[in-house]
Image (tube, rainbow, N blue to C red; front, side, top):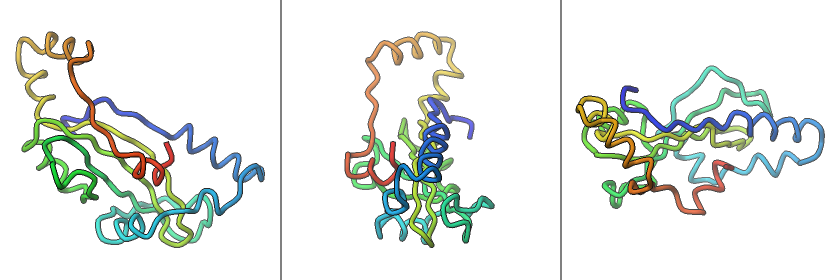
Length: 157
């Protein structure tokens, strides 16, 4: 996506968690604990992948995109289809996206990525003062939003 920025990839955490699972340090029930809400979000808003579940290896994983941001108001924390994100990115100033992979068979779930989207990236890229805007963002005047602690557990950060 054109305005995607501040990308955080959690693939190393996923590999470490799966290594601990396969070595017997943690049990399957500890990692296969997707809530019914997350499983429903995967069913109705998720994007199917070609990647098999790393735990049960029966079904393919589904990606769920959760959005958070001040401008979203009551819509914050909702799962959205991937096709909706570019439209929101052109409409809203800034919002955060959390991508969670889910197995609907064994309830495996893991936060795999998070990033920012929104029009703010267009104004900093297209304006001659883009460097100044980026510097003010880096200096801490820019407020980040994120999910509440209850939502963080489902994606295991």
